[in-house]
Length: 478
Image (tube, rainbow, N blue to C red; front, top):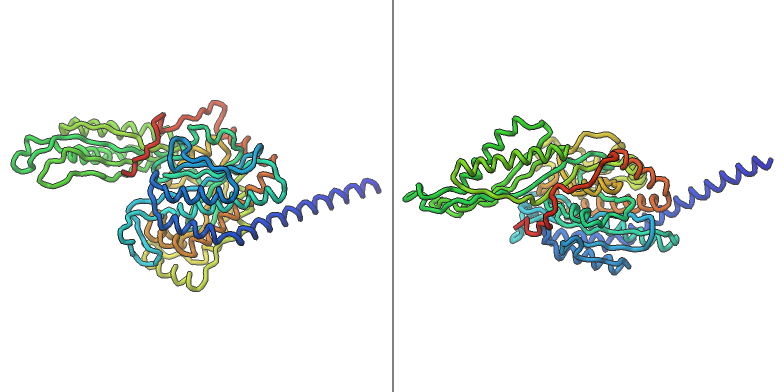
Protein backbone atom coordinates (compact mmCIF):
# COMPACT_ATOMS: atom_id res chain seq x y z
CA UNK A 1 0.00 0.00 0.00
CA UNK A 2 2.83 2.40 0.91
CA UNK A 3 4.47 1.66 -2.43
CA UNK A 4 1.20 2.37 -4.25
CA UNK A 5 0.72 5.64 -2.36
CA UNK A 6 4.29 6.68 -3.12
CA UNK A 7 3.79 5.95 -6.83
CA UNK A 8 0.50 7.83 -6.86
CA UNK A 9 2.12 10.81 -5.14
CA UNK A 10 4.97 10.84 -7.68
CA UNK A 11 2.52 10.68 -10.58
CA UNK A 12 0.43 13.49 -9.14
CA UNK A 13 3.57 15.54 -8.58
CA UNK A 14 4.71 15.03 -12.16
CA UNK A 15 1.24 15.89 -13.47
CA UNK A 16 1.16 19.06 -11.36
CA UNK A 17 4.60 20.09 -12.60
CA UNK A 18 3.56 19.47 -16.20
CA UNK A 19 0.39 21.51 -15.70
CA UNK A 20 2.41 24.30 -14.08
CA UNK A 21 4.83 24.36 -16.99
CA UNK A 22 1.91 24.46 -19.42
CA UNK A 23 0.35 27.38 -17.55
CA UNK A 24 3.68 29.20 -17.45
CA UNK A 25 4.16 28.85 -21.19
CA UNK A 26 0.60 29.98 -21.86
CA UNK A 27 1.33 33.09 -19.81
CA UNK A 28 4.50 33.83 -21.80
CA UNK A 29 2.62 33.51 -25.10
CA UNK A 30 -0.20 35.70 -23.82
CA UNK A 31 2.26 38.35 -22.67
CA UNK A 32 3.88 38.49 -26.12
CA UNK A 33 0.45 38.97 -27.68
CA UNK A 34 -0.26 41.81 -25.22
CA UNK A 35 2.99 43.66 -25.94
CA UNK A 36 3.55 42.87 -29.63
CA UNK A 37 2.32 46.25 -30.91
CA UNK A 38 5.37 48.07 -29.54
CA UNK A 39 7.78 45.64 -31.20
CA UNK A 40 5.84 45.69 -34.46
CA UNK A 41 6.26 49.46 -34.46
CA UNK A 42 9.99 48.99 -33.88
CA UNK A 43 10.23 46.55 -36.79
CA UNK A 44 8.45 48.90 -39.17
CA UNK A 45 10.63 51.83 -38.13
CA UNK A 46 13.77 49.79 -38.83
CA UNK A 47 12.20 48.70 -42.15
CA UNK A 48 11.88 52.39 -42.97
CA UNK A 49 15.43 53.23 -41.88
CA UNK A 50 16.80 50.54 -44.24
CA UNK A 51 20.37 51.03 -43.03
CA UNK A 52 23.10 48.86 -44.54
CA UNK A 53 25.87 47.02 -42.70
CA UNK A 54 27.76 48.96 -40.03
CA UNK A 55 25.71 52.07 -40.88
CA UNK A 56 22.69 51.06 -38.73
CA UNK A 57 22.92 53.94 -36.23
CA UNK A 58 19.17 54.57 -35.93
CA UNK A 59 18.22 50.89 -35.94
CA UNK A 60 20.75 49.96 -33.27
CA UNK A 61 19.85 52.95 -31.10
CA UNK A 62 16.14 52.15 -31.28
CA UNK A 63 16.62 48.55 -30.12
CA UNK A 64 19.00 49.66 -27.38
CA UNK A 65 16.48 52.21 -26.08
CA UNK A 66 13.69 49.64 -26.07
CA UNK A 67 15.76 47.10 -24.14
CA UNK A 68 17.02 49.70 -21.67
CA UNK A 69 13.44 50.75 -21.00
CA UNK A 70 12.61 47.08 -20.34
CA UNK A 71 15.26 46.85 -17.62
CA UNK A 72 18.24 45.46 -19.50
CA UNK A 73 21.80 46.65 -18.97
CA UNK A 74 23.13 47.71 -22.37
CA UNK A 75 26.76 47.77 -23.44
CA UNK A 76 27.16 49.59 -26.75
CA UNK A 77 29.99 49.54 -29.26
CA UNK A 78 31.20 46.04 -28.39
CA UNK A 79 33.95 44.25 -30.36
CA UNK A 80 35.10 47.58 -31.77
CA UNK A 81 31.86 48.04 -33.75
CA UNK A 82 29.80 51.20 -33.08
CA UNK A 83 26.42 49.61 -33.91
CA UNK A 84 27.00 46.29 -32.11
CA UNK A 85 25.76 45.89 -28.54
CA UNK A 86 24.70 43.50 -25.82
CA UNK A 87 21.70 43.85 -23.49
CA UNK A 88 21.75 41.71 -20.34
CA UNK A 89 19.30 40.88 -17.57
CA UNK A 90 19.93 38.66 -14.55
CA UNK A 91 23.10 37.06 -13.33
CA UNK A 92 24.70 33.67 -13.03
CA UNK A 93 24.01 30.49 -14.93
CA UNK A 94 22.57 29.40 -17.19
CA UNK A 95 23.32 32.15 -19.70
CA UNK A 96 20.98 32.07 -22.68
CA UNK A 97 21.86 34.29 -25.64
CA UNK A 98 19.44 35.56 -28.28
CA UNK A 99 20.75 37.00 -31.55
CA UNK A 100 19.16 40.03 -33.21
CA UNK A 101 20.07 41.45 -36.63
CA UNK A 102 18.99 44.73 -38.23
CA UNK A 103 20.98 45.50 -41.42
CA UNK A 104 19.41 46.06 -44.84
CA UNK A 105 20.65 45.23 -48.34
CA UNK A 106 21.67 47.77 -50.99
CA UNK A 107 19.82 48.01 -54.29
CA UNK A 108 16.42 46.64 -53.26
CA UNK A 109 14.40 49.68 -52.21
CA UNK A 110 10.70 48.80 -52.28
CA UNK A 111 7.40 50.04 -50.88
CA UNK A 112 5.09 47.67 -49.00
CA UNK A 113 2.99 46.96 -52.09
CA UNK A 114 2.72 43.84 -54.30
CA UNK A 115 4.15 45.40 -57.46
CA UNK A 116 7.64 46.77 -58.15
CA UNK A 117 7.73 50.23 -56.56
CA UNK A 118 11.09 51.52 -55.30
CA UNK A 119 10.95 54.22 -52.65
CA UNK A 120 12.18 57.53 -54.05
CA UNK A 121 15.51 58.63 -52.63
CA UNK A 122 16.18 55.29 -50.93
CA UNK A 123 18.57 52.66 -52.28
CA UNK A 124 18.44 49.92 -49.66
CA UNK A 125 15.67 47.66 -48.40
CA UNK A 126 15.12 44.85 -45.90
CA UNK A 127 15.18 42.07 -48.49
CA UNK A 128 16.32 39.55 -45.88
CA UNK A 129 13.90 40.69 -43.18
CA UNK A 130 16.44 41.67 -40.55
CA UNK A 131 14.15 44.43 -39.32
CA UNK A 132 11.85 41.63 -38.15
CA UNK A 133 14.76 39.55 -36.86
CA UNK A 134 16.02 42.18 -34.40
CA UNK A 135 12.58 43.24 -33.19
CA UNK A 136 11.29 39.69 -32.63
CA UNK A 137 14.44 38.66 -30.77
CA UNK A 138 14.16 41.73 -28.54
CA UNK A 139 10.50 40.90 -27.92
CA UNK A 140 11.44 37.36 -26.91
CA UNK A 141 14.21 38.59 -24.60
CA UNK A 142 11.82 40.96 -22.81
CA UNK A 143 9.20 38.23 -22.42
CA UNK A 144 11.78 35.89 -20.91
CA UNK A 145 12.96 38.62 -18.55
CA UNK A 146 9.40 39.15 -17.29
CA UNK A 147 8.99 35.38 -16.84
CA UNK A 148 12.24 35.26 -14.85
CA UNK A 149 11.01 37.96 -12.51
CA UNK A 150 7.59 36.35 -12.08
CA UNK A 151 9.03 32.91 -11.34
CA UNK A 152 12.18 34.04 -9.46
CA UNK A 153 14.24 32.18 -12.03
CA UNK A 154 18.00 32.42 -11.62
CA UNK A 155 20.28 32.90 -14.61
CA UNK A 156 20.99 35.41 -17.36
CA UNK A 157 19.23 36.35 -20.56
CA UNK A 158 21.40 38.27 -23.03
CA UNK A 159 20.40 39.91 -26.29
CA UNK A 160 23.11 40.38 -28.91
CA UNK A 161 22.59 43.31 -31.25
CA UNK A 162 24.45 42.08 -34.33
CA UNK A 163 24.84 44.42 -37.31
CA UNK A 164 26.21 43.77 -40.80
CA UNK A 165 25.29 40.11 -41.19
CA UNK A 166 25.10 40.68 -44.94
CA UNK A 167 28.80 40.38 -45.70
CA UNK A 168 30.17 42.26 -42.71
CA UNK A 169 30.66 39.22 -40.44
CA UNK A 170 29.89 41.12 -37.21
CA UNK A 171 29.30 37.99 -35.14
CA UNK A 172 32.75 36.72 -36.08
CA UNK A 173 34.30 39.75 -34.40
CA UNK A 174 32.02 39.25 -31.40
CA UNK A 175 33.09 35.62 -31.11
CA UNK A 176 36.72 36.62 -31.52
CA UNK A 177 36.31 39.22 -28.75
CA UNK A 178 35.09 36.52 -26.34
CA UNK A 179 31.54 37.84 -26.02
CA UNK A 180 30.10 34.31 -26.12
CA UNK A 181 32.59 32.69 -23.75
CA UNK A 182 30.17 32.46 -20.81
CA UNK A 183 27.07 31.56 -22.83
CA UNK A 184 25.44 28.13 -22.49
CA UNK A 185 23.06 28.19 -25.48
CA UNK A 186 22.36 30.67 -28.29
CA UNK A 187 18.95 31.06 -29.96
CA UNK A 188 18.22 32.78 -33.25
CA UNK A 189 15.75 32.84 -36.12
CA UNK A 190 15.43 34.15 -39.66
CA UNK A 191 12.61 35.45 -41.84
CA UNK A 192 11.56 33.18 -44.69
CA UNK A 193 8.62 31.75 -46.60
CA UNK A 194 7.96 28.69 -44.40
CA UNK A 195 7.94 27.60 -40.75
CA UNK A 196 10.70 25.17 -39.79
CA UNK A 197 13.53 24.63 -37.36
CA UNK A 198 16.82 25.27 -39.15
CA UNK A 199 18.77 22.01 -39.32
CA UNK A 200 20.38 22.90 -42.65
CA UNK A 201 24.13 23.56 -42.59
CA UNK A 202 25.04 26.82 -44.30
CA UNK A 203 28.04 27.40 -46.54
CA UNK A 204 31.34 28.69 -45.24
CA UNK A 205 32.26 31.93 -46.95
CA UNK A 206 35.16 34.28 -47.62
CA UNK A 207 34.45 37.62 -49.25
CA UNK A 208 36.68 40.46 -50.30
CA UNK A 209 37.47 43.29 -52.67
CA UNK A 210 40.15 43.22 -55.38
CA UNK A 211 41.43 46.64 -56.38
CA UNK A 212 43.32 47.08 -59.64
CA UNK A 213 45.51 50.11 -60.33
CA UNK A 214 46.44 51.18 -63.85
CA UNK A 215 47.50 54.34 -65.72
CA UNK A 216 44.99 56.86 -67.01
CA UNK A 217 45.28 58.11 -70.58
CA UNK A 218 43.15 59.34 -73.47
CA UNK A 219 41.40 56.20 -74.67
CA UNK A 220 41.49 57.27 -78.33
CA UNK A 221 44.37 59.72 -78.78
CA UNK A 222 46.98 57.88 -76.69
CA UNK A 223 45.71 54.45 -75.54
CA UNK A 224 49.25 53.03 -75.70
CA UNK A 225 50.23 55.30 -72.82
CA UNK A 226 47.55 53.86 -70.57
CA UNK A 227 47.05 50.62 -68.66
CA UNK A 228 43.43 49.78 -67.92
CA UNK A 229 42.53 48.76 -64.39
CA UNK A 230 39.19 47.62 -65.80
CA UNK A 231 41.06 45.24 -68.11
CA UNK A 232 42.61 43.77 -64.96
CA UNK A 233 39.19 43.22 -63.40
CA UNK A 234 37.74 41.71 -66.57
CA UNK A 235 40.74 39.44 -67.07
CA UNK A 236 40.44 38.23 -63.47
CA UNK A 237 36.72 37.61 -63.88
CA UNK A 238 37.32 35.65 -67.09
CA UNK A 239 39.90 33.41 -65.41
CA UNK A 240 37.67 32.80 -62.38
CA UNK A 241 34.76 31.94 -64.65
CA UNK A 242 36.95 29.38 -66.45
CA UNK A 243 37.92 28.02 -63.03
CA UNK A 244 34.31 27.16 -62.23
CA UNK A 245 34.63 23.92 -64.20
CA UNK A 246 37.50 22.82 -61.98
CA UNK A 247 36.22 23.37 -58.45
CA UNK A 248 33.99 21.06 -56.35
CA UNK A 249 30.43 21.21 -57.63
CA UNK A 250 29.08 22.52 -54.30
CA UNK A 251 31.18 25.69 -54.72
CA UNK A 252 29.51 29.06 -55.21
CA UNK A 253 31.50 32.01 -56.60
CA UNK A 254 29.87 35.36 -57.36
CA UNK A 255 31.05 38.89 -57.88
CA UNK A 256 30.05 42.44 -58.79
CA UNK A 257 32.21 45.13 -60.38
CA UNK A 258 31.87 47.99 -57.92
CA UNK A 259 34.11 50.42 -59.82
CA UNK A 260 34.80 50.19 -63.54
CA UNK A 261 35.97 53.63 -64.53
CA UNK A 262 34.45 57.06 -64.93
CA UNK A 263 34.16 57.68 -68.69
CA UNK A 264 34.65 55.57 -71.85
CA UNK A 265 37.23 57.97 -73.29
CA UNK A 266 39.48 57.73 -70.22
CA UNK A 267 41.55 54.59 -69.66
CA UNK A 268 40.48 53.60 -66.12
CA UNK A 269 43.25 54.07 -63.57
CA UNK A 270 41.24 52.29 -60.87
CA UNK A 271 38.75 49.44 -60.87
CA UNK A 272 37.36 47.20 -58.13
CA UNK A 273 35.56 43.87 -58.04
CA UNK A 274 33.83 42.38 -54.97
CA UNK A 275 33.95 38.56 -54.64
CA UNK A 276 32.22 35.88 -52.54
CA UNK A 277 33.53 32.30 -52.38
CA UNK A 278 31.38 29.65 -50.67
CA UNK A 279 31.53 25.92 -50.00
CA UNK A 280 30.20 23.58 -47.26
CA UNK A 281 33.81 23.07 -46.07
CA UNK A 282 35.73 26.06 -44.77
CA UNK A 283 38.99 24.33 -45.74
CA UNK A 284 37.77 24.17 -49.34
CA UNK A 285 36.78 27.82 -49.15
CA UNK A 286 40.30 28.78 -48.10
CA UNK A 287 41.79 26.71 -50.91
CA UNK A 288 39.47 28.13 -53.59
CA UNK A 289 40.05 31.67 -52.32
CA UNK A 290 43.78 31.19 -52.87
CA UNK A 291 43.08 30.21 -56.47
CA UNK A 292 40.97 33.34 -56.91
CA UNK A 293 43.82 35.48 -55.61
CA UNK A 294 46.16 33.73 -58.05
CA UNK A 295 43.80 34.73 -60.84
CA UNK A 296 44.01 38.34 -59.64
CA UNK A 297 47.80 38.24 -59.70
CA UNK A 298 47.80 36.75 -63.20
CA UNK A 299 45.29 39.33 -64.43
CA UNK A 300 47.44 42.17 -63.16
CA UNK A 301 50.56 40.71 -64.76
CA UNK A 302 48.84 40.22 -68.10
CA UNK A 303 47.34 43.72 -68.23
CA UNK A 304 50.30 45.69 -66.95
CA UNK A 305 48.42 46.75 -63.82
CA UNK A 306 48.87 46.13 -60.13
CA UNK A 307 46.38 44.62 -57.71
CA UNK A 308 45.79 44.45 -53.99
CA UNK A 309 42.95 42.88 -52.10
CA UNK A 310 41.23 42.89 -48.74
CA UNK A 311 39.24 40.10 -47.08
CA UNK A 312 36.16 41.94 -45.82
CA UNK A 313 34.23 38.95 -44.47
CA UNK A 314 34.60 35.31 -43.56
CA UNK A 315 32.18 32.92 -41.89
CA UNK A 316 32.10 29.30 -40.79
CA UNK A 317 29.48 26.86 -41.93
CA UNK A 318 26.47 26.60 -39.61
CA UNK A 319 26.60 23.62 -37.24
CA UNK A 320 23.08 22.35 -36.37
CA UNK A 321 22.36 20.88 -32.94
CA UNK A 322 19.74 18.11 -32.95
CA UNK A 323 19.17 18.22 -29.19
CA UNK A 324 18.19 21.87 -29.36
CA UNK A 325 16.44 21.44 -32.69
CA UNK A 326 13.97 18.93 -31.31
CA UNK A 327 13.27 21.18 -28.33
CA UNK A 328 12.63 24.20 -30.54
CA UNK A 329 10.48 22.19 -32.96
CA UNK A 330 8.17 21.19 -30.13
CA UNK A 331 7.68 24.86 -29.31
CA UNK A 332 7.16 25.82 -32.95
CA UNK A 333 4.48 23.14 -33.23
CA UNK A 334 2.85 24.51 -30.10
CA UNK A 335 2.80 28.09 -31.41
CA UNK A 336 1.66 27.28 -34.96
CA UNK A 337 2.10 29.04 -38.27
CA UNK A 338 0.83 32.19 -39.98
CA UNK A 339 -2.81 32.25 -41.12
CA UNK A 340 -3.71 34.81 -43.79
CA UNK A 341 -6.76 37.07 -43.85
CA UNK A 342 -8.66 37.66 -47.08
CA UNK A 343 -6.71 40.87 -47.73
CA UNK A 344 -3.42 39.08 -47.12
CA UNK A 345 -4.40 36.33 -49.53
CA UNK A 346 -5.13 38.97 -52.15
CA UNK A 347 -1.69 40.54 -51.53
CA UNK A 348 -0.09 37.11 -51.84
CA UNK A 349 -1.89 36.40 -55.12
CA UNK A 350 -0.48 39.60 -56.61
CA UNK A 351 3.02 38.77 -55.38
CA UNK A 352 2.72 35.30 -56.92
CA UNK A 353 2.12 36.87 -60.34
CA UNK A 354 5.59 38.46 -60.16
CA UNK A 355 7.55 35.31 -59.23
CA UNK A 356 9.38 33.17 -61.78
CA UNK A 357 8.54 29.84 -60.17
CA UNK A 358 5.15 28.17 -59.98
CA UNK A 359 3.15 29.79 -57.15
CA UNK A 360 2.95 27.93 -53.88
CA UNK A 361 -0.34 27.65 -51.95
CA UNK A 362 -0.66 30.57 -49.56
CA UNK A 363 -1.89 28.07 -46.97
CA UNK A 364 1.72 26.86 -46.66
CA UNK A 365 2.39 29.89 -44.48
CA UNK A 366 0.26 28.28 -41.80
CA UNK A 367 1.99 24.87 -42.02
CA UNK A 368 4.73 23.66 -39.67
CA UNK A 369 7.32 21.72 -41.62
CA UNK A 370 8.27 18.32 -40.13
CA UNK A 371 11.48 18.12 -38.14
CA UNK A 372 14.38 16.79 -40.23
CA UNK A 373 17.61 16.31 -38.28
CA UNK A 374 19.81 15.66 -41.34
CA UNK A 375 19.62 17.95 -44.36
CA UNK A 376 22.03 18.88 -47.19
CA UNK A 377 23.78 22.27 -46.98
CA UNK A 378 21.85 25.35 -48.02
CA UNK A 379 23.02 27.86 -50.59
CA UNK A 380 23.44 30.69 -48.11
CA UNK A 381 26.02 31.75 -45.56
CA UNK A 382 25.71 33.41 -42.17
CA UNK A 383 28.00 34.62 -39.43
CA UNK A 384 25.80 32.64 -37.03
CA UNK A 385 28.01 29.80 -38.26
CA UNK A 386 30.94 31.00 -36.17
CA UNK A 387 28.72 31.25 -33.08
CA UNK A 388 27.46 27.69 -33.63
CA UNK A 389 31.01 26.29 -33.45
CA UNK A 390 31.72 27.84 -30.04
CA UNK A 391 28.28 27.61 -28.34
CA UNK A 392 25.39 25.15 -28.87
CA UNK A 393 23.11 27.08 -31.23
CA UNK A 394 19.65 26.58 -32.69
CA UNK A 395 17.39 28.64 -34.92
CA UNK A 396 14.20 28.60 -36.91
CA UNK A 397 12.61 30.15 -39.95
CA UNK A 398 9.09 31.57 -39.96
CA UNK A 399 6.81 32.60 -42.81
CA UNK A 400 7.30 36.35 -42.97
CA UNK A 401 7.08 36.34 -46.80
CA UNK A 402 4.57 34.95 -49.24
CA UNK A 403 5.32 31.23 -49.80
CA UNK A 404 7.69 30.82 -52.73
CA UNK A 405 9.32 34.24 -52.30
CA UNK A 406 13.11 34.18 -52.59
CA UNK A 407 15.26 36.06 -50.11
CA UNK A 408 17.04 39.21 -51.29
CA UNK A 409 14.13 40.15 -53.56
CA UNK A 410 11.88 43.20 -53.69
CA UNK A 411 8.96 40.85 -52.98
CA UNK A 412 10.56 40.00 -49.62
CA UNK A 413 10.97 43.70 -48.83
CA UNK A 414 7.32 44.34 -49.66
CA UNK A 415 5.87 41.55 -47.51
CA UNK A 416 8.22 42.42 -44.65
CA UNK A 417 6.62 45.84 -44.41
CA UNK A 418 3.08 44.42 -44.01
CA UNK A 419 1.08 42.42 -41.49
CA UNK A 420 2.31 39.24 -43.20
CA UNK A 421 5.85 39.96 -42.03
CA UNK A 422 4.73 41.08 -38.59
CA UNK A 423 2.70 37.91 -38.01
CA UNK A 424 5.70 35.72 -38.80
CA UNK A 425 7.82 37.88 -36.51
CA UNK A 426 5.48 37.25 -33.57
CA UNK A 427 5.58 33.50 -34.20
CA UNK A 428 9.38 33.64 -33.99
CA UNK A 429 9.31 35.69 -30.78
CA UNK A 430 7.02 33.16 -29.11
CA UNK A 431 9.08 30.14 -30.16
CA UNK A 432 12.36 31.68 -29.01
CA UNK A 433 10.87 32.76 -25.68
CA UNK A 434 9.36 29.33 -24.99
CA UNK A 435 12.59 27.58 -25.93
CA UNK A 436 14.51 29.84 -23.55
CA UNK A 437 12.04 29.02 -20.77
CA UNK A 438 12.64 25.32 -21.37
CA UNK A 439 16.39 25.76 -21.26
CA UNK A 440 16.32 27.69 -18.00
CA UNK A 441 14.37 24.85 -16.39
CA UNK A 442 16.11 21.89 -18.09
CA UNK A 443 19.81 21.82 -17.22
CA UNK A 444 20.07 18.28 -18.56
CA UNK A 445 19.09 19.51 -22.03
CA UNK A 446 21.83 22.14 -21.95
CA UNK A 447 24.36 19.49 -20.92
CA UNK A 448 23.23 17.20 -23.73
CA UNK A 449 23.47 20.02 -26.28
CA UNK A 450 27.01 20.82 -25.12
CA UNK A 451 28.00 17.17 -25.39
CA UNK A 452 26.63 17.04 -28.93
CA UNK A 453 28.64 20.14 -29.90
CA UNK A 454 31.81 18.67 -28.42
CA UNK A 455 31.28 15.44 -30.38
CA UNK A 456 30.79 17.28 -33.68
CA UNK A 457 33.81 19.52 -33.17
CA UNK A 458 36.16 16.74 -32.13
CA UNK A 459 38.90 16.89 -29.48
CA UNK A 460 41.34 18.89 -31.61
CA UNK A 461 39.04 21.74 -32.60
CA UNK A 462 40.41 25.23 -32.10
CA UNK A 463 38.47 28.23 -33.28
CA UNK A 464 40.29 30.46 -35.78
CA UNK A 465 38.25 33.03 -37.73
CA UNK A 466 38.46 32.93 -41.51
CA UNK A 467 38.96 36.69 -41.63
CA UNK A 468 42.05 36.47 -39.44
CA UNK A 469 42.98 39.27 -37.06
CA UNK A 470 41.87 42.18 -39.21
CA UNK A 471 39.78 44.92 -37.52
CA UNK A 472 36.07 45.12 -38.39
CA UNK A 473 35.55 46.25 -42.00
CA UNK A 474 33.33 49.14 -40.98
CA UNK A 475 33.38 50.71 -44.44
CA UNK A 476 32.80 47.59 -46.54
CA UNK A 477 29.54 49.07 -47.87
CA UNK A 478 31.27 52.25 -49.09
